[in-house]
Length: 79
Image 1: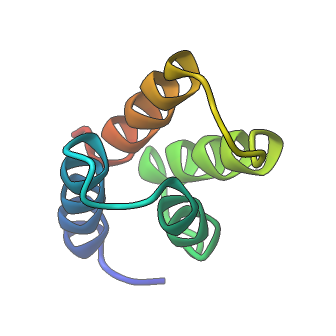
Image 2: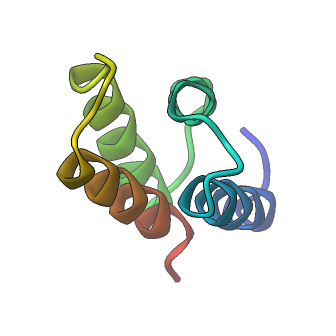
Image 3: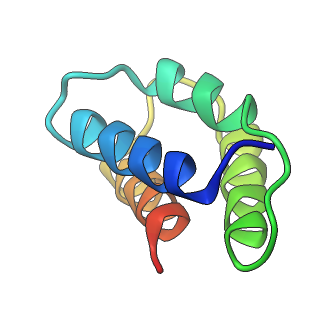
């Protein structure tokens, strides 16, 4: 388990890069699936994002899926 501050900073960076088209979805998916365990409330958000990316792992994805991807990433970094 890494620090919550590191998790939040990384999630913001990944979200911003993905939203701007500077990061491929598969890279984002691998990052999310590689996250460890975190305490509440971030832990639940990480688990939700992991489940989302496990279930939606096929390319190409619709714009609606990308929007939910971004929401899941933003949720991880929310206070």
